[in-house]
Length: 324
Image (cartoon, rainbow, N blue to C red):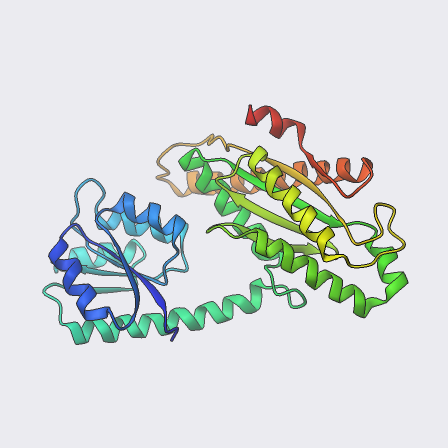
């Protein structure tokens, strides 16, 4: 189990929060929210390894909160800890996506044991997920995970009205680099560039990924195209500062990159509340198409950067209009 697991307690009762904190303070890093909306906002900024959730809260109850967490953060286990101990409430909790249900008043040893068990399962699940979502050479996310996250972030941005942007990145004249310096040096170059890109995607929710070959992408939730272009310029400069020799580049005497930027505020075309399976499927299809459109626009902007001499950043014109 990770020594510093992050546990989010969501309860509107300060006494309940205090009791849970006292029971779990040796288990990991504890933080708390007093309502469902606050919990979701905190998760977007500070990812958790496990959520402890009360059922009976004003404004947004635990069942609605659990469903939203399960939708947006399906890898995060939720345990209900609540005074609502009837069978109907337990079934509702499990149907909303909870992994366990504990009735109040709590027994601290029982809570510790169950939390520890679910944290251990979460760690094992994370390890398996890493194997299938990471690029084996560079260690950053692979294209499969990028595709999944782009669609889910697009759908989340539709609901929140927040912008979403993407950077599409290509190492300039990389084939010529491989031909000149060999594939071992080529792999080293890819790793160094990937590390620079990954360090630049440093906010919660940002994702750097290897798209394939010498191409990379960065997904930037809650970033306008203008903000994303600033990040892109910093990445370009950081790669130049690596000072990796490249005497066959048409752009510079060192390895450089070109970046295309696209983004905007997704518009949700479906119902605000998705009730039927058909509506959910339609929204998923729409999210997939919209995500692909984001890739395509960033790719076209990258082509414009290549056509402008490489070693530069270009922003998709439609994204610029949306940013105004």
